[in-house]
Image: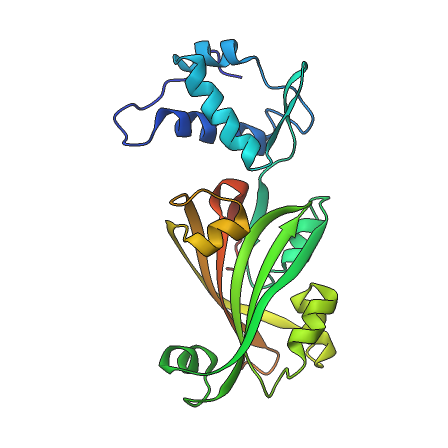
Length: 246
């Protein structure tokens, strides 16, 4: 690990956040492995040229995100790496999480039927007024919330989707029950914005914290849009990876 790290104090980014991002990047890269002990606050303060209060704030943020854990009397340890989340033609939350030795789960937090407006009709390539299923879900890994998402499906194609998802916690398995055994990602558009109150509560974030917004369209094997989603992800808990097929 680098003995001294220079921070950009003119970047308009809070010093504690720069420290947090540096430590998180080192965890992702393997400099600090899971269950390894973080250097003492005094050592980190000397490394970054700041006071211990600033370091403590960075550590507190990483602890709140489940990346670090504080063991009383022993120090601060790496609890888990930020989730590496590849974006490609086969983006499956459960497979991604399971592949990193974590336990995925999905929770149904709301559902309704609504008529397709102009935007939804365009995304799903259906006539205006088509009845859609709107589903609100929370995606979790090892008990930590990562993504809250709103998805729309044509009701006629997956009439029992809400019940099937509530039972399985998996979009893939719920679609399989409707006879849809595969689907591919057409596109994903990624932006960033401050978290809103409802999402902040679901994700355990403070109001105003940045989130990643991923708007995506999935296609059925017939090439017709099957699902349009707007997912909001806790930016500090995951790292998006755009694969070569994206």
